[in-house]
Amino acid sequence: MLPTISWAQESDEDDEYQTDFLYGINFNTNGGLIGGLVLRYSTVIDSKMKQTFGLEIVNVKHPKEIRSQSATNGNTYIYGKSNYLFAIRPQYGRELLLFRKAPEEGVRISAIGAIGPSFGIVKPYFIALDDGFGNVTIEQFDPGNIRHSQQNILGSAAFTRLTGTKIAMGIHAKAGLSFEIGGFRSSATGFEVGALVEAYTKKVIIVPLAENRSVFTSIYLNIFFKSKR
Image 1: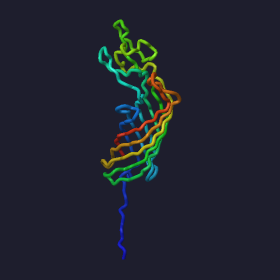
Image 2: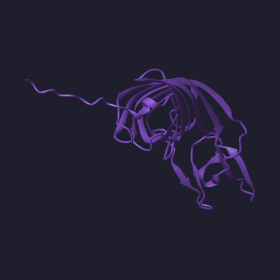
Image 3: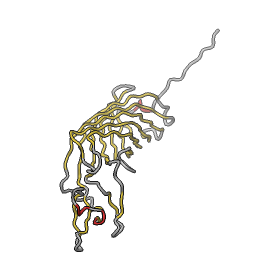
Image 4: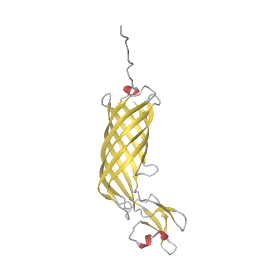
């Protein structure tokens, strides 16, 4: 008689939950040290698929941004920068389960895809200037203004100044892999890695003296915490 081999059925603690809420920190190749914040709400479609509703708020920097120091007072500023770009990205997507994990242990791997509009907040970058008569003026950097030379710049101005802020409209799409690490039964931590492309209807001028783009590409890493219900 041939021996009988029985296989244990693979289980996944997510089978018990219909929704989950994720929040985390974004790092990307356009965002500097910390790119921004990520939120995502997911609902189950079937045993392998979820639909997702997400929001990302990230800072998009120009690769030519170089921090300088005022020779007058030592304050720092970014010479040549004229605007900030903050991208607000609502998105709809799908999450496809690739590998399950056992309850409270192992790694759950999923493929992630999402698309949505992009609202680019283009906020002027203001600098503090010495007018040569002992007064300080606050102005947006203008490469064509001879008073905006480095010897006259005292540093960057307060970030809270919103004068001249505009909206740039666009669209974005991303694809990646999510690695969820076992935690408590109704929560988990993990990370997501992938690529994102974002296109605006016109060029966004961040550093006027350098090449500026309407299409941005980046590699991203999200570190997240997830709660399940």
